[in-house]
Image (cartoon, rainbow, N blue to C red; front, side, top):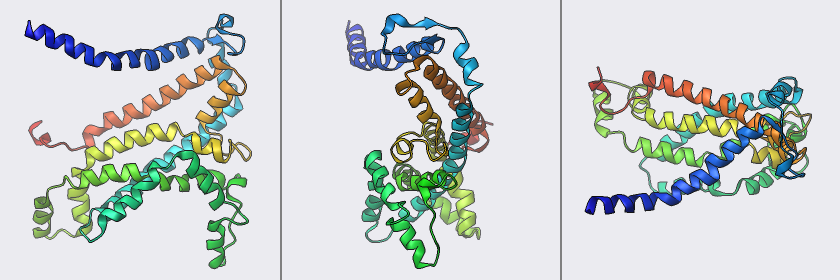
Length: 298
């Protein structure tokens, strides 16, 4: 009797989560899947949904802007994901040092990540401004004439990648927690064996925080392919579609052109791309991710 009561209580506790998953995640996903094979402009009501089979997917592969958005997103993800991981690890190593006032520096590095993306975007628009922006003024001190950044198709995407370093605070904190879990004895043993700082980092730190790297890499890939807010606020895909990210193009199709079926098909292609890259990382993890107790596996 006591067990059945406990079971009912457990089910009641997970019921809100289950209903939320059903209504706000699985339901919309299923509806989106149906729409990807349909034509619907959302304005005429749900009764106007027209089944068109694979027409949306066929049209996508003849769409030049689809390839442009894919290219922009791939370049951004391939550059930003490793760049942000390296920068985050290096800053986390500095923040892991035992010096006075370190809590203050940790707070300073984490604060930008809690500022809303729209506010950060507005601030960086001013920083990148070619006339009065602080970045070009700083470059002028060294005799360098700064570009037009967000107005120049050759620099706009690079500017967004550089700006992203501003928001790596969350990743830094996760790396910092991973670094603090590395036993000091391992460093002492490596030092006794004559290992230098770089050798200790490669042979002790990296293997010990490899589960953290794995987690952050997965999150970075997902975030990189879903990049949207900053591009929407700062460039809206311009100039000359040089920052037309995949999610931005998808948004335009859904809520500007009202082609919900086409946008749904785009979203499922993005889902497949993220899934493939995530599975590649997960499948490769057995070769480079170390967990305590792995020695017992063989």
